[in-house]
Length: 173
Image (cartoon, rainbow, N blue to C red):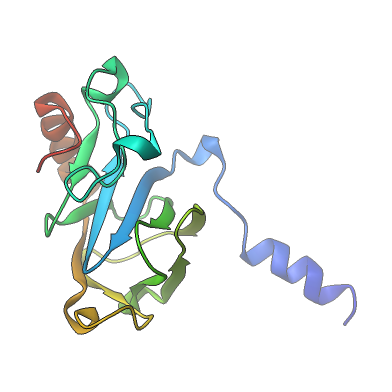
C-alpha cells in the first residue's frame, strides 16, 4: 500500500506535457464574474503588469505590446471555449477576494487566490455547454457569479480561435 498509492497518484494526476498541446487559459475571478485570456495564434502571451490591471483590463495587459495584439479575451459573460478530447490547463487567479472556479459537471474545482496563479488541468470528454460557478462565498453577489464554458469539436474550436485571434486584442469580446 505504501508504494501503490504514490505510484497510482502520479499515474492519474499527470500534468499535460507540451507534446499533448494543451489549451492554456488564464482565468481571472472578480466580483462577480469570470474572465479568460488565451495566447493568440503566435502562442505568446501579451505583456502583463499589475499596475495596468483594472475592472476593464483584469489581466493587466499592455495594449502596446505586439504579442498582445492577437490574444483572445473572454470578458464579462463571453463564453470560454475549448476543444473536446484535448487537455486544458487553466491558470486561475483572483483580482479581489478568494473565489473558487468550479465546473460541476466536469468535477473541476480550484481556488482562485489574489496574488497567486494556481493551475488546474482536465480533459473535456463531451461536447456541450457547461456552467462555471464560484464555490467560495465571496460577497453579496456570489450566487450570481457564473460563467459559460463551451466544449466544441476541434474544427469548431480552431475556427473560433482563428477568428478571435485575428480580430485581436484580449481586452474585448
